[in-house]
Image 1 (cartoon, rainbow, N blue to C red):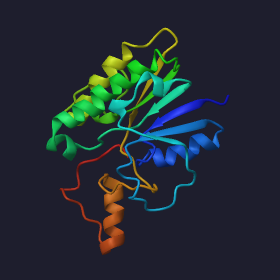
Image 2 (cartoon, rainbow, N blue to C red):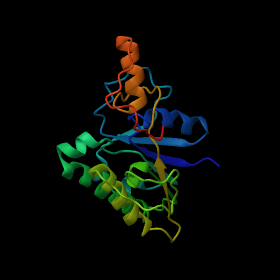
Image 3 (cartoon, helix red, strand yellow):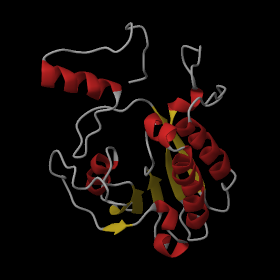
Image 4 (cartoon, rainbow, N blue to C red):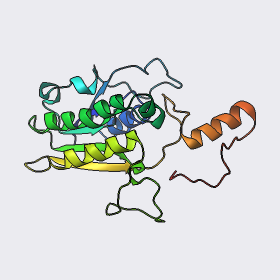
Length: 208
């Protein structure tokens, strides 16, 4: 079934890969992005989608009118930014996400997919975590995801169905690369210097 999808953060690391996937599946995709990273293009976009250049905090119910689904990726997405200014992460990742969902529901949006994170589990001692595992957010980024999930979950019902995707550590080629994630950093260093540099004793692991 063809859906009209609003994709926030469509010019980001994940969004610039996801937009052509959604379009290729036959959906009508409209992006939302501040455009800060649009000039930082490593490889050409496979498709260009219509876009709204806005901060997600400025979106209104009118911007969401006529959409069947929202795929919400837009965020400040790493711990150093949270350490630099925790208010930015709280305002954009938590409050911005909740406001977006609160605008989507009365606009008639049925599905709301939120790109959350497994960082919410913190330093879990469990070999495998699932939806019932306790949360232990240790950073502002992680706390923002917990707050957003809790608030958006309360909006469920009345034809509004939110889904939370607790993603692991992402990696791979994108039109707008991130080299701060662990595997991308290791590969980038190897290509640039001929050496894989590990800044630890080698014992930590990440859910790649």
